[in-house]
Image 1 (cartoon, rainbow over the protein chains, first blue to last red):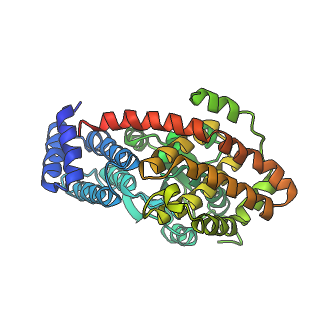
Image 2 (image 1 turned 90 degrees about the vertical axis):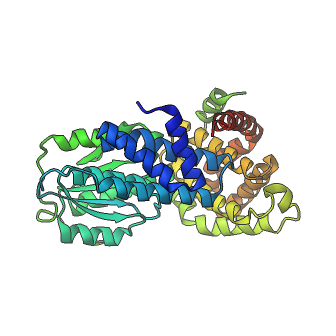
Image 3 (image 1 turned 135 degrees about the vertical axis):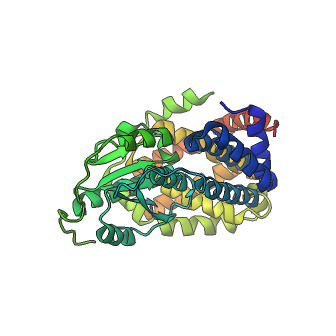
Length: 227
Length: 156
């Protein structure tokens, strides 16, 4: 949808640390489309994937990669202030990365979509310790838990976490997405109850547009000796 | 030799039982420490990994063990082969030589033999031998992929 040369300019801006140029391009796309999801999916996400590719072949340094991430996070904050938020729905979602996951930009995008749809978002960010997560769920009693997973080799840990969550909070609805799942088919994780896999932000928006029923996850929980 | 060759030969690797996978995981920290020690004490370390890449190498060793644990627990040949190719692309681009992989995998095999039970070693060793036997295949494919990615990135 977007002009290819503008996308290239955006990427060049990220690499050169030209925040103003990047912001201007992102704002322009948002003005034209009025769709935050389009900006995230078609401009920010592919640019960050390309930044990863450029680091991989040693065309940019780790420092440049961090710079690009910082600019992107700043753009997310700018765009958020321009969002039209739906009326409050009295629904809460905890949005988090699992332990040892340090990539949180995708998670911020997910948070913005939830907020746009009128949800209360509890953003825990990167590298949330398992014990703290369980305590937090108990206190907050959310309708949904949204987990982002970037690294494929964290999948066994993620599956263990999901199994523990099922025992302690059997009614808790869990949503998962992220780069790790680009490498495996959804069927390989779909045998877990109350778990929804979403491929991208478009699927997230579609999911939220439907009226799902949510039960209290805390009220009916069973006890686990571990948590 | 191409990716299909790697996928086909990986398909013949044995499935690892839970006891062996758990033993590998429980001894991971010790095995990584031994691996780091053995590689870092080599006189040809600079030729193997390039200048100033010691930390990157140690990160790779830790990531490698977590990755192999994942693959043994949840086998997926597509992920297995594509992830190794990613490692070859990334580390080669950052100055690691092809010989580093052969050296590293040989040391891994020795450490596995010393640290694991015979039953676990006999199950897990074929995975490492397969990676070692295919080092040059991975290296060739990775070089081609780097060339393509570099050409694509030249527009920036």
